[in-house]
Length: 246
Image 1 (cartoon, rainbow, N blue to C red):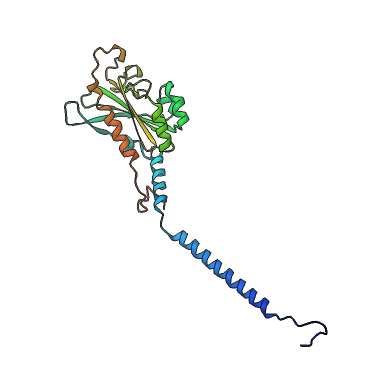
Image 2: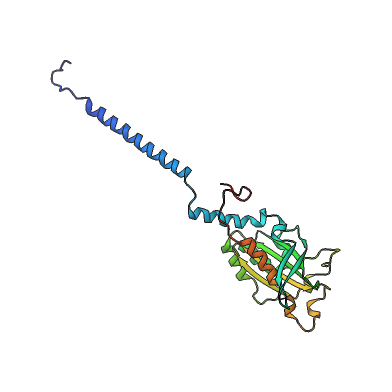
């Protein structure tokens, strides 16, 4: 190499070292990032993720479960005389609109809470003298359901409340909202379950003389049975292809 007069030669190796070091650092960073991404993709779900997935699955049940799974053909209840009896399902409504199932006085409050739909079915008691309509009111989450529960009457009276569901040509064809004599409200998870009960002959509640509350005491049992199954949390199981996507 020939020196240029008045100028000192500038060494090249420091720049090469810096460039090499930067290349090495970038490679290490890329490797760490790739490793982290691989770990994220291959790790199992966290406990919080499992809980969220479970809550979302519960909130979808009213929409994805078959109606017969929510309202089975028979529901057990505690009889007034003691022991256990079975109520038989008369029918299930295909109409899931909130406004169709609820008295007008409740519609605004439940709509504000986020009512997504109401599933209704009517059952006949074992003695074939009392009809009970069970209504599942679905909300986006538990917080919304709690809000809705607070807006509902706590007196146990059937009105305002769930509207009676009758099926023409069956034992329930005279069951109307005027004949409602007892009601109940329960809440668990994203669901509020209401019941309304009356006598099979369709007599108006105002025409009933002496009240017999024990006659309708089993009605809340039916609602609680439906609610217990519908709201019971289930942790995700990737082996259950029909229930979960993993």
